[in-house]
Amino acid sequence: MATSLQTLVPILSLLLLAHVSTSYGGSIAIYWGQSAAEGTLREACATGRYKYVMLAFLNKFGSGRTPSINLAGHCNPANGGCMVASRNIKFCQSKGIKVLLSIGGGIGSYSLASPADAKSFATYLYNHYLGGRSSARPLGDAVLDGIDFDIELGSTANWNLLARNLKGFSKPSRRVYLSAAPQCPFPDRFLGKALNTGLFDYVWVQFYNNAPCQYAPGNINKLISSWNRWTSSVPGKGKIFLGLPAARKAAGSGYIPPSVLTSQILPRIKRSPRYGGVMLWSRYWDKQTGYSAAIIKKV
Image (cartoon, rainbow, N blue to C red; front, side, top):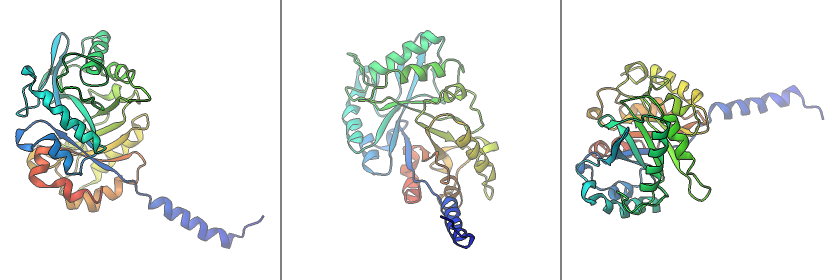
């Protein structure tokens, strides 16, 4: 059946408008664990503002080191004191919140000496924090949802192999989720090869402490350009998050006032189907400023 040009024009205009105005919804991810003053994990999850919580950090492992988790002033894993976290982890998960263990961090001693080391550490993580079994689980019997890679120092080798080995433990009945927190200069020095596996479910890119790709007062162009590169370049279907400090003092640079984020930046980046939301560093700083509360309705 023939359709007149006069009929097609308004239809095409509506389709174009729908495409241009597409906006994807997102969630907030938060790092917890580096200050006793941030409150308990249960309190963080009870706010209802976070969809993902990363326990920070397991910052000693690999190359013959005995793995060790450091939750700052919250508990002492050396005497089994962190096992009490189990009930709070389960509380968060009962609220639909995914809880992941973050490995690495800006301070620590870690590396993976070989492919065999990557496989061995993956098995350790599975048995001690995920769905495996061990008589010595530092956080008790709670089963975490996955592992977060916040690799910022040491060797760049074998993180891709760790990711592959961890994903190998994933089952239809219990997935092993992987997330990563690369720096915004692309590709990330430490995590570039790992991200190229396409295995990561969530990527919270740190758009701070990196002048070439972060926000500067009055200038969102560098950030938007970097965001577009990340969302178009990372293989797989994983969601990309805008990683930000929740307070001016939370990072050396890159802080974005909530009003600027919600009015100028989120409307632009939410056009990408890869958009997942906003990651904040950290629960301590968010508790001080109320950053997540100020942006949540726009995320």
